[in-house]
Structure formats: structure tokens, C-alpha cells
Length: 402
Image (cartoon, rainbow, N blue to C red; front, top):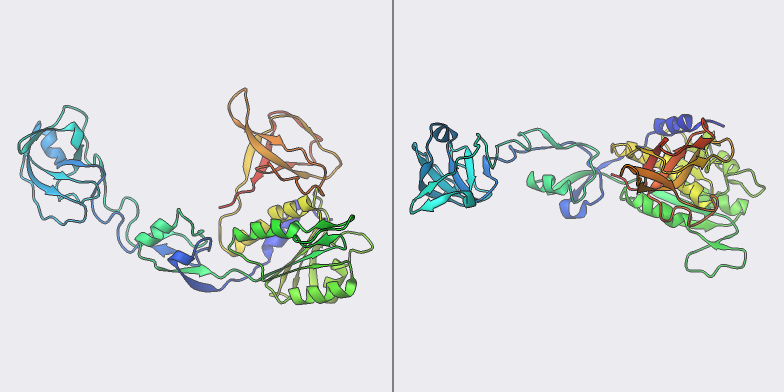
């Protein structure tokens, strides 16, 4: 049995090269950029008015001029070759390009207009006041969206501004999911008295959708060696195979043996972690299907995915690693057993100092289908301390990503 860091390192060693494809910008949500996107020009491409007002020269203001002649009016999108003489200004609208030599913008409500002149108040002025300087957001040819960036409502503005209508993205891997167990029935079936509906598939589905991955194959297979072998063999045609259940030490846990029979190389089996100890990880050949065989209890599946599989998916898409926070415990917690534990927790406010803190969510073991409900993520209790005391700092993995 290996420790968590050894297991994660082994997972991250394996690669899964993705092909570059192009998606139209309105169809690229949740894909990841396959190359750096560079600015096609400076942004903004001109000195831009940030407010409606009057544009004038800082040198004039420094020389003591407080009354300016309004010589022109400029709107967004207009070009102007205006050259202001001393004591002259232009009335300008938000978004318009400032004429050369005018580097102070007085808000329209701050000036007092008399005919074609404007009086400016005595206040602090500086060059660049109320304007966005050319290139302050990005210089031409600079990287505005790095490889591995997720395309979402925040990044799409930069891509659209740069004229990237067809976006180079990573093609998602093909994924097969097999849920195992005589006790499982599909979501739309009425379970027998000793059966349960398969919830693990939908938990994994929602997590994979964060990477724009839609499983191409999903099935529930009973604890029958021949049926399992047939389904796993079919699943090995995908880039990634996820098996839920059948990896422990019971008489019906056939998955590790079948994978070996089908030529899948075991990289590790069993991790010193709670929940999720029976996790199995391997690969078909050196560049073939990557296999995550996860323990079947719902919380074990989620922990195995969050701690090991999610960082690996971030790696193959060149995305930033999942966020890890360091937060204080709001209350004492005792570790049951000897294995380091991930437990569902919520972020709450500590009444003493108004600092965010971690509060454990009550649940009834790793088989509790509602164990993660109401939680914000997973907190970590290392085996180095049997008791987490109030205000002890713990590692916290939020469910949200990227």
C-alpha cells in the first residue's frame, strides 16, 4: 500500500496526449486552449476615454490655466486629427480616442460650462487621469490567453476582442464508465428490497463535464466475471476507462484480475487513504487506455476522483492545478483509525474573528449517498495528529474548479 503523494505522483507521470481541433467561438465553452493566444494589436489600441468629460493637456493645467476653450466634440468610434493649442480642450465621450497631446480627462459633471468655455476646479490632476492608456491591458503579440486556459464567460471577451472566431482547443478524451455490482439498478428503475440506484455515474458525469467530457459509453454490470470481462474489454477502446466498484478484497471483486488478464499494467493498487483505500490505477501498454478503478462507495468514488483523477485531467489539458486552500478548523475533530482522511466540509465564518473556517459535515460513512451534500469540498486530516483542534490549519479542496 502506497501513500497519497506516491499515488498522485504515479498518476501524474502518465500522459494522455490530446489532439488540437478548432471550435467556433460560440461552441467553445468549457474547452481548453491548445495554444497561446496573442494580441493582434495593443489593447486598448488608443488612449481611451474612461468617462464622459473634457480632455485637456496636463502641461496647461500645471501652468495654471483653469479656463479652457472647447474646440471640438468626439464620440466613440470617431477619428480625429485635432491638435490643441494652449488653453484648448475637447468634449469627449466614454470610449472615444483621445487626440494626441491631451492627457487629462475631467469628468463632465466637474466642469462649469459657459458658452464655448469650461472652467475646471482646483483639485489634484495628473497625466493619464480618467483615461485608459494605449496597450495598458495588452501589448501587440503578448499572450492574452495562455495554453490550458478554460474558455468561459470570463476568457471569451479577450478572445473575441482579438478576433479569434475559430479557437484552437484540445479535443476531449473518450471515456467509458462501468458501474459494477449486483445491487445496482439504473436511475429509472425501481430497485428491489436489497438494491440501490447507481449514483456514482452521475457524480462522475458532473465532474467530467467541467472538462467538457461526455462519456461515450456507460453500463451497469453485475458481479459476473464473464460479463465484466466483456464490458471492460469494450471499455479499453476508450482513452480513459473508469470502473466503479469491484476493486476491494471480496469474493466478487473481480476487476483487478480481469484487468490483468486483458493486459492492463497495474501501476498501483491500494492507497493509504480514507475513504478510497482500494483505488486501482493502471494503463494498457505504454500509450493506451488509462484506467481508474475506483472503490464503489459514493464518497470513496468522489474522494478518489478529486484527489487523483482531477489533477491528472488538469495536467493533460495543460490547465492550472486544482485549488488547495489552507483554512482553520472551526471545531475539534478526532481521527478514527490510522489512515489519513478526507472528509466533507463546508466553509463557514468563525464568529470570533470573522475569518473563514472549516466545519465538518456530518455523514454516515463512505457509503452514505448524501455524504457530500451541503459541503463545499473536502478537508484533510493527516495521520500525524489524532485530533484536529479548533484553529488548526487544514488543507481544503473546493468542489468548484477553474
